[in-house]
Length: 217
Image (tube, rainbow, N blue to C red; front, side, top):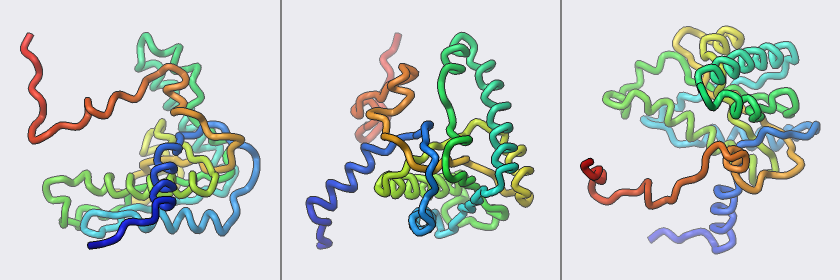
């Protein structure tokens, strides 16, 4: 029978999971190249369905390109606000990205040509996206262990970002990741602190044997 990690090693794993935060506030300091390499390697060691490794990572080092990406996010932020109706004003007060302050911008994307990968995707083609999400989570947890913050930005039109990054047909951006040093990590998820939403009790999300039946009205 395989042996578990030591108690302190297990504690570190659970700690990084619980203390990971979606960061929006960064301080101006570069990320060490060796640390960045470790984070990218962590992402690349994520599980993937059929071992297809569908993730592609674009590191944005051009200030002009960063500015264009920020413009694309701002356009979608305003459209999202308009779509939220009565919650528009509350949304507009939220800080939803740190793209102008973070040290690094990484765009996580799905590769092109994914249709040729059938293993594990014949009935669930979205498993390519699930695999990229695993890569993002690997990088995110590794960054937290390194004392770095990560913010996942999803407010953008995928076609706009694909065009800016000259992606081939069929490739699709999934996330703009802000990576960098932070003064401190939020004590709780920022949207919870801001009163936007709260984490529901675990028991409301875990079922046994079948989906619970809704009580009839």
